[in-house]
Image (cartoon, rainbow, N blue to C red; front, side, top):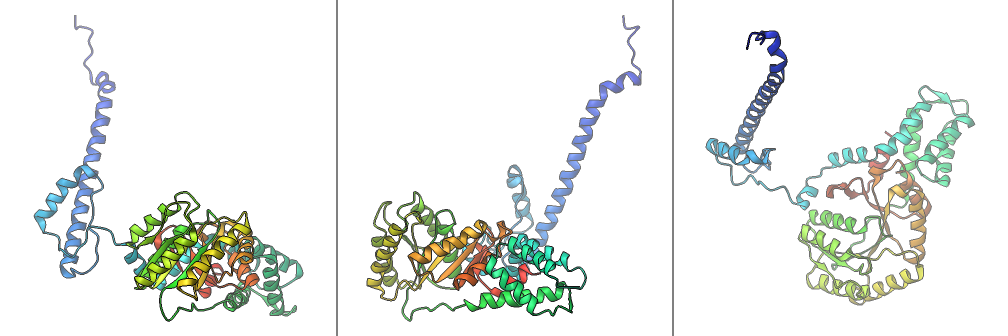
Length: 406
């Protein structure tokens, strides 16, 4: 019966191959897990040693990636040594994150955020001046085209080109370093002309009216501004005077909860001027240093917007005659020349005293800051280069110029 049944090795190989492959994979996975666990234990012991030497140092514990292993591994760690009480298991607060930003780390983040703009300007221009060459009209036209693509604006680009041409005699030859130095110098001059320090009142609160069209991230920007001033040890109050847009009040309240800041609000559809008036009274009573007032972003009807902002200004001036001390317009850098049109439109409605330009990391048109400043002579107060709470910082013209003309 079994005479024809072949038990040779060659007949068993096809049958055993799948099982051998699975066994090999299982063995490999087991080895990887052992190596990984060993590495994690070494890192954690190193963490414990560092914590014991400097308990006040803010070190975040190493957490297991697999939730199913968390109980087992934490038990093993507890057998080695108890964690110092000073070592916090929770992440740092938003305000602490802002405080942790150094000048150098911000410059690095700024350079990274402006990478697309830098590629548009510096990379293209440096390729035109790989060796020293005379500034011919044809070459100047190419330089003009590169700067124009960065959305600097025609009139501002013309000024830069004229300055470049005047600084280089026709008989001379220039290289990229020469051109870069000239453009950086002129760009800094343009930005410095509008620079103006903030004038804080002798008696708080410092009232800032924040305006801007819907979709530019106005409410989020207010939350980041609040975090920045809190990190400067200033007490902050927020006002939800955008009672028109759905969820605007709730969105600002989320920021207030996150930062531990009070939000003065009423229900949707309430009179924005009444909300602003209550906020100023509350800021005075609580002796808040800074009050940010969020406003509606409607611009399709300038008459309505002008009337609404006018009522808000009159309402808050009843409590603080000099308020609002600043009116900041939030702009989205990705809109390019449309941002220029927004500045023009809002200046017809209200006296804009400062600009906040966000989303510079998402555009190759970051040169729009130069054009806006040159055209309207309005200082840029803050710029944003990302979504994190630490990605909004005060504007520094030198850092900005260094980042786009690297």
